[in-house]
Length: 55
Image (cartoon, rainbow, N blue to C red; front, side, top):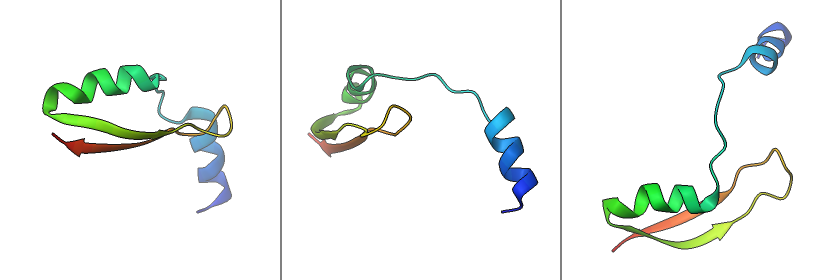
């Protein structure tokens, strides 16, 4: 990517709202999925990883 685009993405990127692992599970489980594994982020700005299985 072009450096200028990277800067724009970091400064004015899409806003997002953080969701806890419990909030993610509560949102997905009504669709018939069960969380079989959660790998938490290693750094504060990282992403949690989830493995859901169809129940």
